[in-house]
Image (cartoon, rainbow, N blue to C red; front, side, top):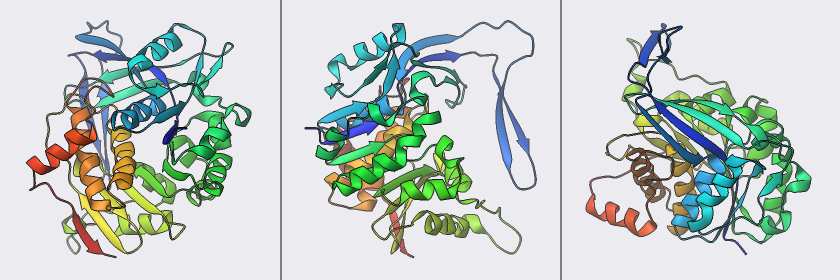
Length: 349
């Protein structure tokens, strides 16, 4: 029996870095957008190249196992060279793969990750089998036995099974952590609400939270300096809309600006842990899964879980690859003791 079951995607990721890549910023009055660009019609030399196994299901299962939890993974792959690479990756990861779904007629997910000189990335993703998980393929008996079900973002038709999975888990007293993805969010709030109602911990980034709620954070004006407030008033409205049940804990990450949490009584804020940035790929998976694991390990201490998640996420950013920098709980706790100045802030709602 697994302590933790993860459901999510599995991909073969090809990392490409090119010194000729540019970052172009386009700004409007109320927002700005950054683009990665290459000279149009040119043949460019690749500066660096690597292949790694990734995907939310892979990254989070690896992290939970590394944190000491007995872990089982559910993801879907095809019968091809990429799936063979994924199974090889897990040989020394102590993750049970008995519930992995294999479809000989489908293709394994594949991504090309364009890495910028700043360490951020643009991902070109082929979802493949990740988008075709069916209810009949899910091992519900394993979910019923687990302490925690962690749901990473799912793609395409796989979202159709989400509401039944989370409802089943909650009915059988399996704790549910839900990391929402854009595919499900785009289905609208009424669809998303069905998932939220059965989820104990919900994690989104700021852009996803804005998309889900229809609330956009206002920029500072001469009269009001929203940026000077610990929690932006519009983010507070996001939290309140996303929290559809009393038992829920909502977490919103804001990239390099840190992360926030809300339990209905208090708001929590934790900045990013200071560390060199090589690549941000996998940082979100590391943060969300570490938060859920730490929230359990630290007996519901929200602030301490945010600190632990930030430390592990920063460790992933410091390495090339979505799982290369993952820390154990012992290593995380050691860093917390070595950096007592790294703290969270809590204010009343």
